[in-house]
Image 1 (cartoon, helix red, strand yellow):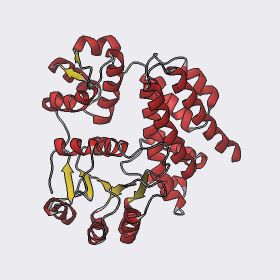
Image 2: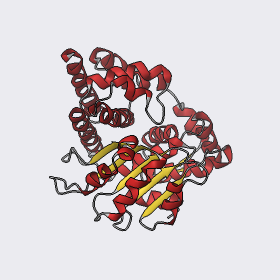
Image 3: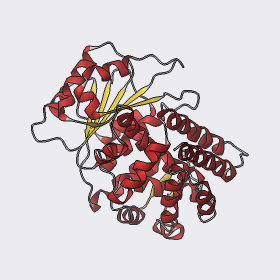
Length: 344
């Protein structure tokens, strides 16, 4: 069934039993990935380290029953697992049909790129009631108000047209980057769904969209690369009050590593996994990501993702130590990667 963005956002809050699979595809890969990340958050549980299972698209294509098996697997924790397919390909249609022919089980979100005109996968998804299929097109400036509004409203921010345009232009229309900036602004303005605040272009300028981004990127790389000393230095440079933003940036990096670890665990080299990543990894980061894949195990990544969610919840608790909790969690992750470096 072909759906719009509003329908996918409704699934952020509750995944109904009559939807077996969400297919996200189109030119705007950042939008597809952002939607998948938000869908995954409702399944995240620190007590369940296997709340999200990631499969590579080529694995699903070569072995359609791997998707059926993952969707049918019962969790030892008693909760549903979200099965996430990264880089679903056109010939993954056989796996999708096999999934729908099997008994209902764990929900599946599949991320594909731009499907060709006449795609049988897209046609099947759009005519099947048990599939929610969303195509995301490259956004233009005229989409700024709508796009920023979709992201900001759940965080309690009502963005003016000028603020939306400023955010859109600063992030070059990238939905993931816009979300990160809106998260900063929500913390800055102390907004929430039950505590809404207006967002004006003066707020965007006051916070300085992009402020500290270079250090933030470096911090994520230092954590994933197991360099605790660099992490301590970089934590001291970042603006205060963005601990949750940083934790979520690290979460995105580890989620990417988790999908690539699945390929490495299947017998491929770290370099092969990096070169074949979809969406592609920025060329300047390929060497670093290949090294990070040798430092982290699948089990270590899953454990760390659970700890990040636990830290975020603790930080949001009334009277918590806030940034101290964030810094402690970040250093713990860096030390775990460092242990992997020493093992090599």
